[in-house]
Image (cartoon, rainbow, N blue to C red; front, side):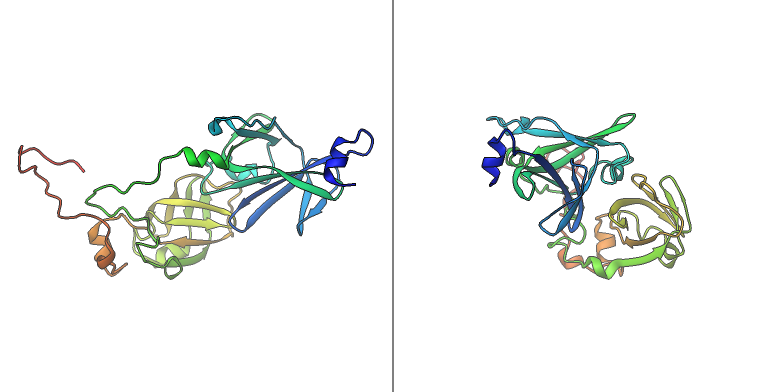
Length: 265
């Protein structure tokens, strides 16, 4: 019996839903049934998971979906101390026994925690069509994201591996940080497993993260990447030696030649 027939049957229908969260090549897969389900080579493990109604309307901004899970759900706890960063996709499949079809697809925008549960809020992929495109501003400092195509710097070349010595909230220390001069990692990224956070301060063997990483502990292996303050001075220095690709307009005058006032950029 196919999906359509099982869905319409009063006696044979056994609806099961599969939830696939993905970020890059990392996946978290759950099912609302009591036994594990293997679908498209991935194993969906049983979890306390429930979604709201799927609403389709002419206003794509309102076509969001709320998924409620246990507060300690392995996917949700990644965002207990930090907002959702990057593109985290959610695909919901619905089926009967071994016949599943995709019934919803979108991007996770937020995770809200309550005393015992967490609510995952996802927006339809169509909502991205309502956004304005990125606009490059006229600035003295470089507007290119570090390691982007226009920046041309290779992220791999600025990777520093290490092991955590101490961790207290957003403060982390490691011997590897001391191998570079203070400030080297400021503005860069700190990655542990599936988690990534911006480094907002670096001095000696210590750094401070923008947000705390859940379950980070002494002995964890990490990768740290150099940061940039987007100034021409740093861009042309030996750190990057990338002045030919500098994306700022550094010759913008400080004083307005017509009014005599300062130019704020």
